[in-house]
Image (cartoon, rainbow, N blue to C red; front, side, top):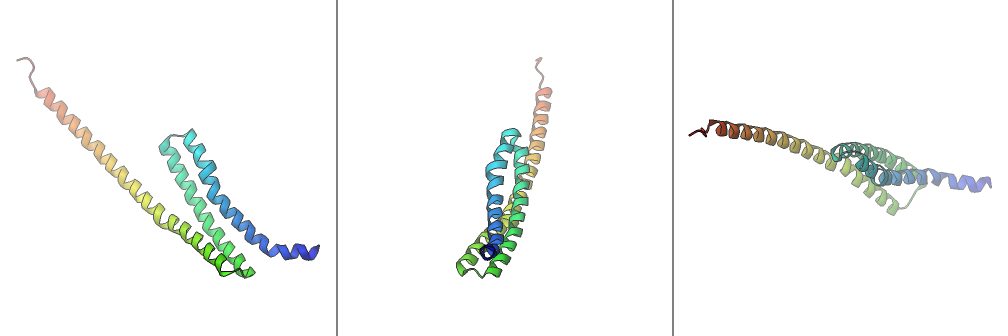
Length: 138
């Protein structure tokens, strides 16, 4: 009995880290985000969901390192290494490239929106000045 338990123990760490990695991908997307968008305004929910996704992806990368250490200790096959590397690479690209680009685009769109609203205020003021300048008495 003790030998069976000790034989299963080395794989337990790898299985636990893989299960936690799966949970970090599923829970924010299918549990947290729908609740946020149902309860808050779209802008608030998007901001909070983005931060939650960022933190969960960073935790995912930490768990990838843990899984790689467990896999190295177990001596898993090359196919397992390639799958782990592919998943880690995709999440790393999402965290460090795609999310960064989305943040930059959000900043640019906010700046354009602010500039656009200032232009509209100027246009309204000039239109009102032109309307006030017209003499309707005559």
